Image 1 (tube, rainbow, N blue to C red):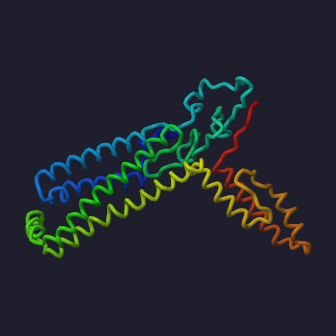
Image 2 (cartoon, helix red, strand yellow):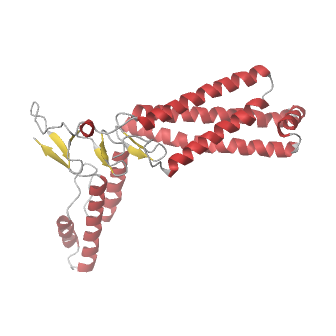
Image 3 (cartoon, one colour):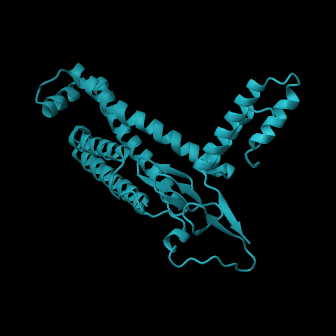
Length: 292
């Protein structure tokens, strides 16, 4: 059972995220910050970007380090199936412990996560009630950091057109005269493209989660709703995300009623698809037994 994102083995996406973050930060300190006009601007921008980098790194470590597991998992050696004030108890059929009503099993972490949202491959950790707040702060801080870097690169690129002489002097200092002014501009376009592309992706993810919060949904709820929506397009009877998945016998009855000619082949296919879809949902969301 994985307790946090720093347990071995690391996820490949986690390694890529660390390397990409390191390259972007190192590139800013080695190239961008020292290209600004004045010494005061260089010091101010470098200090600001450094503080933002440390804050983003802190949030990343915090979110990956927090154990988002259900309290019942952490207390599984002492958990008892008791009823308090006639409140129902939920038991995960995989973990075999009492869990919260909205806890879900994560197959990658092999544990139930309280208020499960999703498993973040970039942090190698589950996102749930315990670390969802820090996860949202991490997305915001990362977006600000990327936009900060992109803004500085835009200023430097624009300066190469508005003040070519100054840009030429800086590129001779920075690159030892190895490239022309045109090459200098091409280099800054490349330096600008990377943070802008990443900012677009992170911003889209942040907006997605803000919309989910506004709707009172989690990522897991959204995925289930989309899965039910696609399933209802294949099934004769429409179902809502709140309805339980229909059994294969109900699907057979519905197809028989809609197909009076009785084409057994098509009915069997639809039943098989419905059964496979039902098993897929159960694999992703293990059944919880309610004890009252």
